[in-house]
Image 1 (spheres, helix red, strand yellow):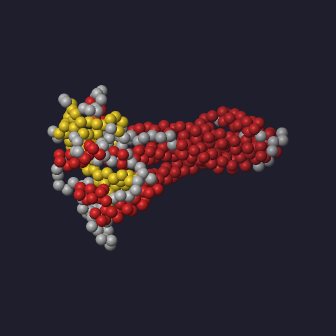
Image 2: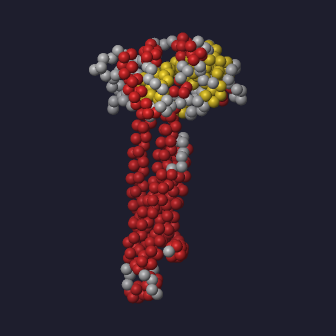
Image 3: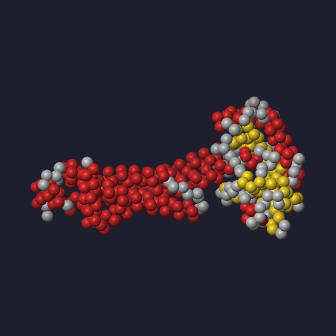
Length: 413
């Protein structure tokens, strides 16, 4: 069986070489269809990977209580459906003191400003730095990691220490080759000792997460006084299986803090860390479906072209078929020979299409700054599709060749 397979492949390759130009054109037609499919699926995979990395910054098994949730704040016209009152510091603090669900850590934070200028000796940043007032649970709850120095301690927060944790961009902007830990920076005239540097997180849709200064929340409240500050409360659940129940309990507790009656709708938002990413990933599924539609339309044209070249090949080799049948070749042998030629051409087109598709997908992903990943699903799908195209396109020409009358075939000129 293996010997017969090798012989058929050898004959197929020989036939392909005798019709090289026609075969190359057919391979290119198939490759274009596969390329379109693989390229789009590659970009979609890169998009999903980028979204997953960008929104993982909230941390796993985490949910937040804010003025609005992430998904249903606006209606189709872009206007806020319901105006929720801000969450005050007193409300956040009351919630934290009374929410005692097991295996949870609660953090309170707020964005003090997004236009601060940070100075170190003679160096200074542009006035585009975000200052965030935080507590000792903010960094782990947000999925952040201190790579140099340490996180805030309960002592730092309780004693309103003038210490700070910086994003990774400050290494390049202010400190150059120096170790930032234990250096003193100036924010709005206040001096802060650097106790830690965060691991690089990159940007989320153009908003840098690495140009932030985190300071104790009470210090931030004293330095950045403004009306109507909205506070965010984040809760991390240590055990994933308790997440749903913890969310329900937190909603009940916040209703008590807000003094809502059982029949009133909630006037705050509860957002799980995976809500927004799941919503966006649902949208990318439509992009994947579009890729399949475009690819299938193109591949349909490729299959017609492949069937046409094989029918022409059968006609041109009618006399050869007659000679082989006269020498004792079975119908199945003839059919397998032509079928194998179709498979070889189809797989050559598939391989070329996969290579071109990945290269184009990589180029597009790099151009729009998506995080490229090898699209294994697209590669497997391309091999399967090219095989199916070859099977469908090669079946009729192979059967036609097998059914030729040997006497009529020998008389064919």
